[in-house]
Length: 207
Image 1 (spheres, rainbow, N blue to C red):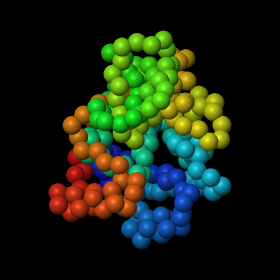
Image 2 (image 1 turned 30 degrees about the vertical axis):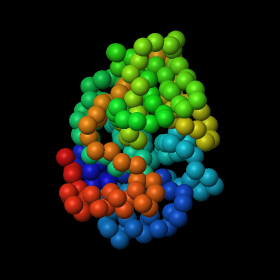
Image 3 (image 1 turned 60 degrees about the vertical axis):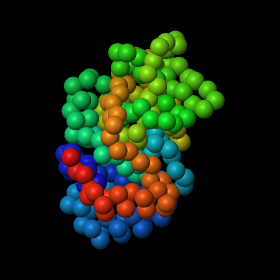
């Protein structure tokens, strides 16, 4: 939240499912870090990023593009530069990507258009196969609110599926290259402890 606020964000929508009361109490105890915070409750089951985003749409009804930031990743990429790039590229969504080892990668052509997705056992193309850069997603998007009426998927769904479908019908899904910046998966206690040690050593980099 502090890094997003340093990039200009002043309102947050937090998706809640697992131990929601603990997250709410943590934010209250910290004065919401000085920001306006709303909660989107996924009470019955997690809806994945796509379903969660669509469920939270009534809370994201402003005219300006917004960040979607996974809570289990940490990155020191330039969020302000990413937002500026999105405003200038005319995209429906801009995805933070980088060249790093992973079994799942988005495929972008040399004009920065989303062409497909490659997993461990399959490659899915939004268009006919072509020469493309295979780039790892960093868990950060900038999304224009115009996406909501275009999300025809229902229930639990991945934004990867939605992005590939939207790219197939001509919508602009663009990359923001964040190569060389620090990025970490913090989805386990051990990985989180490693990050906490790094922040204690180097400080939280806000810009």
